[in-house]
Length: 212
Image 1 (cartoon, rainbow, N blue to C red):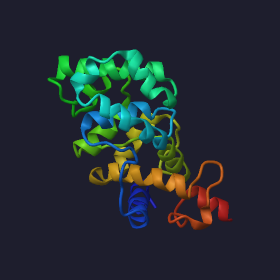
Image 2 (cartoon, one colour):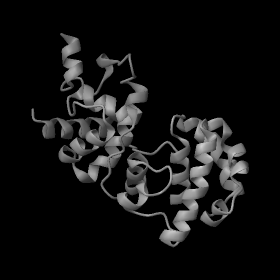
Image 3 (spheres, helix red, strand yellow):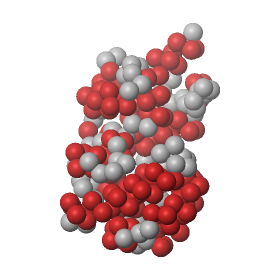
Image 4 (cartoon, rainbow, N blue to C red):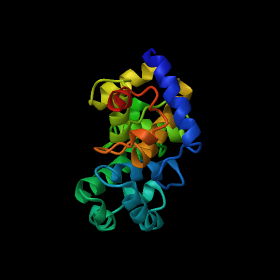
């Protein structure tokens, strides 16, 4: 089985197990997703979803955030960890979105990663979920699972993204990443994967090795 064949098999297996491929962060517009994703760094999505309702109630637009007192944003996002850096990035990214992008969240990787606090993972999430473009969101679950499957052999997020773009169907890549997260939380748990219950055990390199 080639890597492309295995990738397609993984896409199909996860589609069957997790028909709904949805981002677990709650948002109602592109800016909210951008901010929620920045808050999710080294923090659970569940925690972010507890914090953002009050944040988005107080600051309703990119202009509101750009004019915000960073200290006030810090108080609202305190429980997400690294709150000072996150609050600073949120306010500064909104100022740049207004100044450089006519108040609209950019739709391409180069512009997105030029914003304060925005890395490739966040940029890919925005491109895929908001703008419907092919995207590979390299979170820890995706990196771990694709290594176990034998699709990649690196822990470097950018290298994983590059390798997966070569073998995943572009129109399926974004949803595959969401499903990998669900699978990582449900079955392929870090340090204690439930290989016997896995929908990909028939072709997973780690699973096959583990069953011998």
